[in-house]
Image 1 (tube, rainbow, N blue to C red):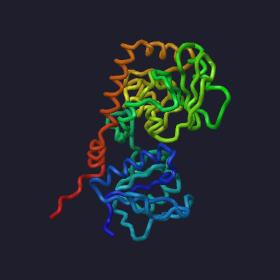
Image 2 (cartoon, helix red, strand yellow):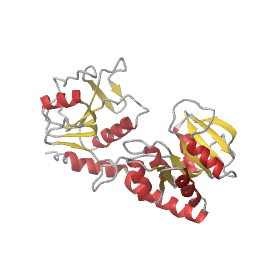
Image 3 (cartoon, one colour):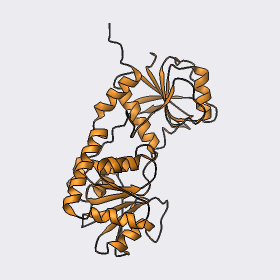
Length: 314
C-alpha cells in the first residue's frame, strides 16, 4: 500500500449517534479529496474492515492500541479523542504532527494541536449538509407550522415536557410548542398535550426544523452544535442556554439568543414572535450557517492548508 498523507484515528468512528463521529467522518472525507487517507479504529468487534469510502485498519483493543506495522509513521495524524492510551501510542510512533478534536488535557507534546471547529480566529469548521426539499412540505404528522421547537436535553420518555418547554407553553398559551425527545415529537398547547408522532429519519427532523418559528436547543452538541447549524441553514433562529460551547457562539454570531432562566427564555422567544424581526434574524442565521458550514469545498481547502498541499505528479 502507498503511504498516506494523513491518518485519522477514530475511537468513536462507529458511534453513529455521536457528534464527534460525525465531525471525524466529515474531516476524513474532506481530507481524502486531496490526500491519501488511512482510518484507524479500535477493534471492530466483527464489523469488518469496509466502511463505504474507507478501508478501516484495526489498532487493537481500546485500552491498548497498537500502530499497524505496515503503516508509515510519516503521515500527519488527526485524532477524534486524544486519550492517554492514544497519546502514549503516538508519542512512541512519532508522526510529524498531531491534531486532535477532543481530550488532550496534560498529555500533549510539541507539534500537537487542538483543532478549533467553531469560533476563534481560524476555525477548521466542517460541512453540515441539509436537504432543501424539507422546506417544501411540513412534517406529515402535524397540520400546523410556525411552532416553537424544543430539542430536549433529557433521555428516555417522560409524561411532562422539559421545564423550558413548559415555560414556553405556559407563557405563549396560544402557540404550539413541539418537543423532540427520544425520537418522538410531542405537540403541546397551553400545557396540554395535543399529540405525538415519531421522527424516523433525518428528513423528518429537517422538516421539523424548517417549519419552526424558532429552535430552542437545550443541549447543543459539544463539538459543533450540529442541530443548531441545521436549523440556521433552514433560516430558523436558535435559542440556547447561556453556557460555554459552540451553541452559544452560533447564537451570538447569527442574531439568535441565549438564556439563563425562564424569564430570559420567554423574552427571547417573545422577540422572535414578531414576524419582521423573525424574518430578519432567520435570514442572518441562514447567511451565517451557509457561509461557515455550507460549502464542502471550503473544508477541503482548509484541510489542504493544515496538512500541506500534495506534491504535483511528475
